[in-house]
Length: 298
Image 1 (cartoon, helix red, strand yellow):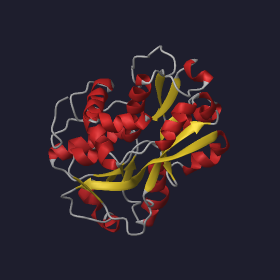
Image 2 (cartoon, one colour; image 1 turned 45 degrees about the vertical axis):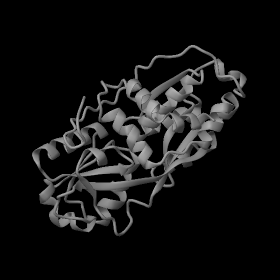
Image 3 (cartoon, helix red, strand yellow; image 1 turned 135 degrees about the vertical axis):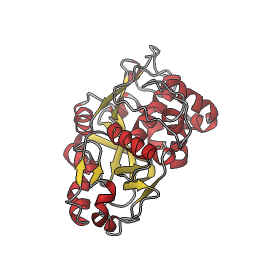
């Protein structure tokens, strides 16, 4: 789809990526003996676009280095269970210390945290920028402006959990219908409301390309119930370092700020991509940012 940021037509799908698999062995260097014996499996959260972007980026980078890479889409609970059991090698989208803390507490003995590659992440409640309120403290008294609805994402996600357990009771929002279904469904409603010039309140997070695509503002959270800024961490299985030592070192050093991430997300989700085949958009973005990408494996 070819669109501008203000007239974006959201084309969102959750299905997995039909990616071409390379058959070559590991790149030369210090890769472990097992690195050429099987693919690296990166688990990707359904609907979490920063994770999709980072995973597609690393798939391209690693395949250029001679590794075979598979992306597997699943919800967070299945991802952490799979990594702990060795079914997946890693995920690039663990938010700490709040959003995914429960999974780290449950499976932490079988997971390895390689650290944060982005430290600018934040859970938010966002509204259209011309909405007549600026704070979560005003939302209850103006619920009718938003159709008495707060549009959420996947039930069981950390964002939905903190909204249900902290934000709604903390700001007296029990009178709103908190709708949970999926991130694509939320974004579709956001698109429709924007097109119709209607007010809407949604659960969202930074970094997310929606902030570039839609006229949005975050409602102030004076009581801090959505938590402070978080880091987006890479988490691997316990044997990943032994199986893929070279890749483990690269991922341990990986850093990506919001501006760079937004640039990649715009290229993938807001440009001429088709369906879930992000490979051409990622390849074009890499070509435009070649020096930065080369440094990921230097």
